[in-house]
Length: 280
Image 1 (tube, rainbow, N blue to C red):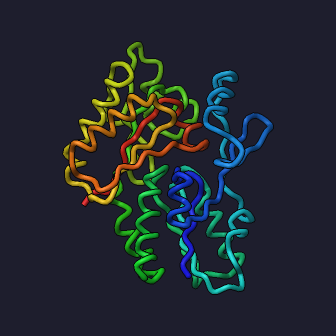
Image 2 (tube, rainbow, N blue to C red):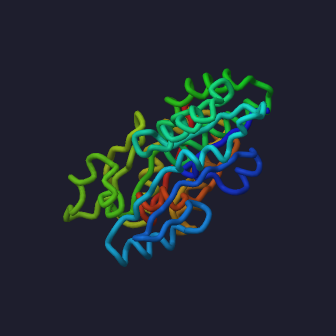
């Protein structure tokens, strides 16, 4: 049997995790001296409150080697395909490789560096689960996913630069931070890293919809199976407007809304929204 695992940064909802039978390995969030597990005992809202009160971005940490080992059966026959956040952002990938090495299950365990984050990973996970359900062999699934990985289009628009700036994981943000004008950059995930792209101005729904409309040409040539609207707590009116816009394109079989988890939210801040899909 093929078991598909992923670290918690994939931001898949509980319904999707259950539907596709995905095992989730939590990352850690540190609020001062206190440690929490992403998706288990800490919410994005608690993180935002702590971060704003202390003028700090929480520290986050990858699952340990031992954490990964708990999801593997050393003496079983199951095969494993594990997805991790980009190795540019975390040691999740390397820790998983070490766990496989320790347990000596090289012949039946595969680790995929997603070169992405959030539902940019989730798109690949669901595709892998569908291929497994169709009876494809694990090695062939891994090769197919690696070919698909570069076709994932992941971007998001931020309401505030503060969290990205404090986190220090997005090159180019420092040059924008502190601008006299209210800037909302599109953050592009590319080659496993984040960088600012086009800059937007305005309030709430305007800058979000301008960002989505600028994706239209790419959306119209995307794979039809699904598109994600992933956000860190946007107003329902904004999310509904994005959904309506995507519905009117008549391009996607499925439009899925998900909430970013604690780790992703701690770095992007509240009011962030992304539209993520796979190109043809």
